[in-house]
Length: 277
Image (tube, rainbow, N blue to C red; front, side):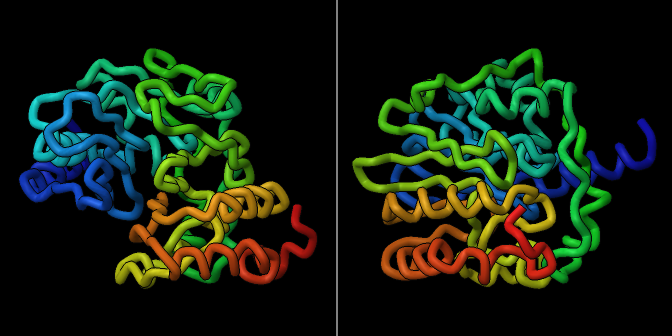
């Protein structure tokens, strides 16, 4: 084991025992892996739960620790990925190896998580924050998940989540999805919109809560991103759990999401981009 791997393992072991999901609803909880959230769907103690996204790399043990505190020894029925960026699939292979469960993703994301295509390099010129400046160095080639990955059905249904449907929300990536439960208007938005200014490391550190567009440094089709935000706003979600930032609900969520949808070009699209694409 080289020095870097040893440090990663030591860091992960140091944090073991402190990983605990925060409850949003009785059957929804989230756990933040440094800069990005993973979501647990299933009531505490249930044996039919599902994991949404897998966070950054080297967090598999902490995610499993949080899962065990919530569900005991029950493994998830599946892993659903909102998209394939490194901070959402970083621990996917390790988790699937351990749990031996299928992973599902939109068909348009399959090439990015099976080694066939790489995402575009991050854009350091947008957002003005540290994460934007560092984004060209973020991984664009993901781990090959071919052993476990399956395309989501074309009809919007989600395996093992009977009350939920997925909505294709391209823009941030070609096959990005959000998950929506109509009966209580609960939304898991991925990075279609987020509740923290992700370009700014300070905003991420203090988790200042406000609805923002998708992380600008990794969004490459702003026209599609705008359409996706408008579609999600039209659902009038009551609760939203996003890929980055804290969950939001109620009137403040509705007001800020509608404002973003109405003024997307001014609030989300980087000024120097000019045209949406």
